[in-house]
Length: 467
Ligand code: GLN
Image 1 (cartoon, rainbow, N blue to C red):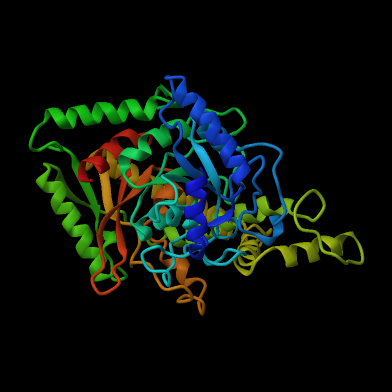
Image 2: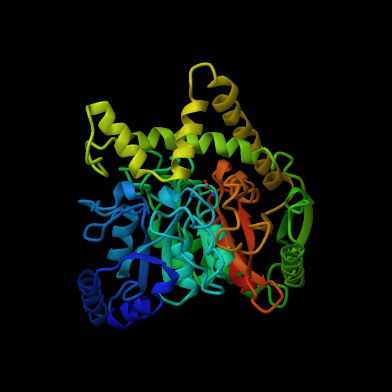
């Protein structure tokens, strides 16, 4: 733990970590040593990890990268944090992210942007930017992230590492600072797909403390072992198939993912990844997800609506920031919120409150929910009739420079086009590295692989055969 903490210190310029506590990490490392000495250590014993700062942790502060929670320490651990600790993983601290996970570049953190290890002038992606940066820089072997509309896949893509968002409901949200509850889902980030198998398998499982947690995944109990078993079975099958391991796998390639906004270098990297898959025996099938464009307005109605409701708990009374001076109770709440929340969070609360207003609710929120259903149906039709997995880009371009989108904060919203529909549908999806931009300062490009509900094991096996 000590040498890992020294490396974190040496890379402080990345601003990937918001909070380390050598004492706590050493205690966890000692416990892992005991497990290892016992000869029956679980798979993750001694593996250095860190958590996105939206998972509450006993001991380490949990800020959600917001001034609102600057001094908050939770009395309990998030389910995900507890499960990874039980499996022997050693936490090195808490990772930078966008404030309340709202953003795509980690530029909305109240504690300054995290930086991309490939080029420190570039964003690492968001909102789990510190998680991807810490893994890419080799500071930890794995990190937790959360994905509401792309926040695991997108930073993984922009930092050249791998990340998976599982089917909604398979990983407990208990102890995750809430953003958009019907979309929020935790997932791991690590270097290779194979590393993700054990992490996701450990993190997932039914949790009665999360009301949307699933007891069963397609008839199989939602518990540790499910994903590993599916991964191993798929891998055995691929191995037995010999030179063309993916023979018979149908890859759906949505035409809408190759639109005018997609940069040439990203399009080329995706094309060459698809050719590699074809050489492994997979078959490419052109598909259509006609409502892809609508995923942006639908998401940016639903997510802010849920956020405005979730964030109403920060009232300056129970926990979080409280203004130093105020005239009465209402003034205290409004000053505390105005001081505690950053501009993007305030923008989301305003949008969310507006679309939920009496008189606008039907026109915006209800309409967005209808579109959400149609988007989910489009994916189901493709999986039922045409393909086993879907592949395409994660982001339209490689990582932008820090500050590039400062003039127009909604430019970031438009760049979420390839990830939002999948989140609205609740499907599992991942990002694996598939290339670099050309030039003197190359930046990574990610390939997105989407599966049908509960097919995390298959997805990881498909990703593993590429890597
Ligand atoms: N970029 C999206 C947003 O800003 C997604 C963020 C996320 O997945 N947490 O809402």
